Image (tube, rainbow, N blue to C red; front, side, top):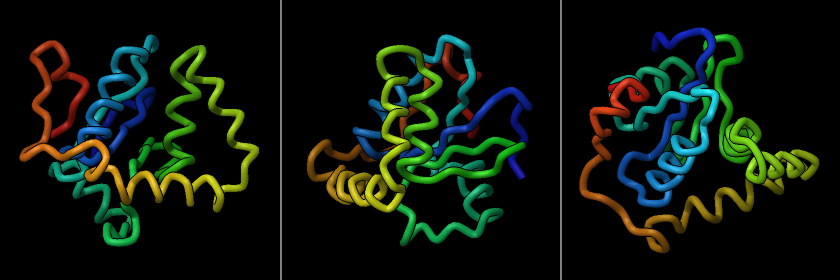
Length: 138
């Protein structure tokens, strides 16, 4: 399994998706408590977690949030848990936890399904700058 420090959470994202990469940049900028680490779903660490949790990547086109203590969160739940740790005003999005998961995930899936069409796609995964290298797993 992937080893991360106990006080950290690992965000797994689509490394070739422009929307996902921009979201990662946003989280890095607003993660004042240095809580999050990152890895692409396409990385060795991403593949190890996908395999360990038996995630069907055909059915789960999603951001994943992993913590050693709590396991894995998917889709809108992962996105809202991440947002809740980023400070005001983005943490106010956690109010959407009152919306039933199936409705939140319907909206999430609609965006995920169209993300390449709307935001574009890279040829390869993002390579972190030397200053950010310690936030990323390979």
